[in-house]
Image (cartoon, one colour):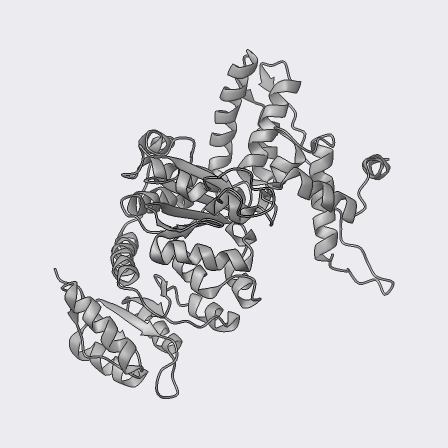
Length: 465
């Protein structure tokens, strides 16, 4: 059945451009609305399936006001705007749109977004009528072949599996969101492995671990003699990924000047090495961050146009504390792996340990759980894991002289968390199972933080004393 689309846009050129794009793609287009009042009349008469909606319109009401009514009526909608104001973005986000299209609008982005929005809206409608019920272990056996190393039965993980299957068949950019340690790189691997590019390279780049003066050369390459010290030609990561996929982890760390070059890659599918010529490339871009990019946009640290280009299909990896039903499944999985590696035999965990695993909040997410199980296997001889080196619970809030509780500052919370992880690792900084790995930081970055926060190993012993 042909999808009927309503355009709500008060700028004639923008609205007409959208109409031409849609009609050329064989969509049915309703009358164009330039205000909320006109849009509601058209909705009542023409019954659109999906609405492309600008935020600022003619009249007193905005696109956000209309979006709330569309949500109540269960009509799919996508915002079209170039506004980067944080308050406006937050307000728009509360209406649960299926996405944002940034102006000036590109045909490819429009068509991809409509496909995605239509599919997700269909899934949402079906979910209202039925909730999938899988027996314990069913999700693991069902998805283990396609999504190797991503385990879980929780609703959040099942939704993630479904989203990966949707997006893997396209070439659209994907922004993978989630806290440190949730497994964003595993998601990128699963997307690549289930895509048509699976026989080509998957190149992984950690933007946060690269020195600022080397990022451009690392990503785009350089020619011999293009700058002091360029003794030979260097092929950049984008060119190395030709025909395949590049995964840019911690994309929020990319400097503003390089964000411009990266935007050109997404828009024009071409790169320019330092001292070289413009070259066309065929690379799919996956990116990830644990930062709030909307906040970064509002603060001027991340380009709004780049954010929207990346955010065509966002995937959210839920934190471990929001998928409690997966904790013991993951713990058993890691126990089998490390028992096999060490040649030990374990039948599982004691009931007290299983209770402790479920009670703990897991600020380091799956990576923290994995490292904890590895250390436990090394310490215990078996047959049961009967103790866990869990970090000490957070200290109670201090009271001010008036007797009122004082909320800790961000610096104090960061200091306490880093110190807790350092103690947990016996002050091992780098390497497998080290604090830098658990905190998802480069070792040099962690050392700088330790120095800046004035942390010393003796502090740990004084606190325990």
